[in-house]
Length: 299
Image (tube, rainbow, N blue to C red; front, side, top):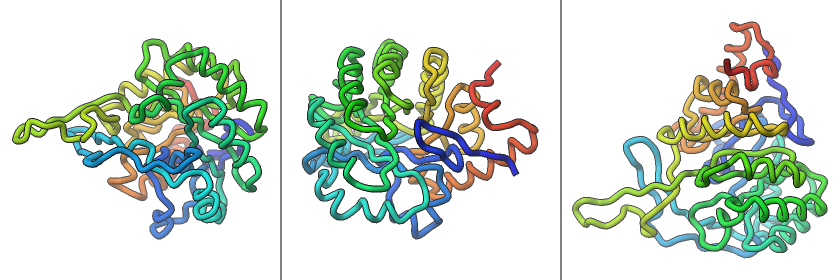
């Protein structure tokens, strides 16, 4: 049986498969043993509760999904009180996704989470396209990214993963800035901008008009971003964006991702992560290649 173990920052993953933030809930535990995943990434948490954007905020397209959730979440205090203990029941790495409206707010969230046991890492969401004055505003300025990650690096010894936006001209600059500031890993990409219009009402299908676009339609965009960033950083990359099956996952790994995350496809097939883990084992056995040798092996 192929060995799929991989190190991401200070974490040892039993396999390189996880889920994208906001696409996977603990209700999936009713369908399979979540402990089989390499890691679980929570929905993004902010210091205070967020109601999210006004509906409609989800719309299917010909090749993917539009969403404008707006970081709806119960807030840090309620997350710790009601949700965290449920995540801690599983024998896998727990990564809490966090966002904030200022560097100090990011720091405040991590300081509180660092007091909680059995959290293995943080995904710093500086790439959400669906909120104003936070999220993506951080992820488009390499100086702000450096200041933010440097600040958080001083606060926590746990693994810091920085989630990057593709909605920028030179993603490599942001990746290098995060690495120099002390990030342990990068995850990319978040959604790209998209839109759909109801021709009967002539109104956008999403209340906010423009939304985040995910699913198979963005896979080529995500893949080329992983490929470009893998050439300029030494820290691991968690690749995501339109992964629907093992072959898609393999493309990301060969492009340079050390691990992969499944997002939109979780809504279609809740068992897809397990299928990909099994598919990776089968591929490695058939190809007679070690997993680490496959990473970034594009010719």
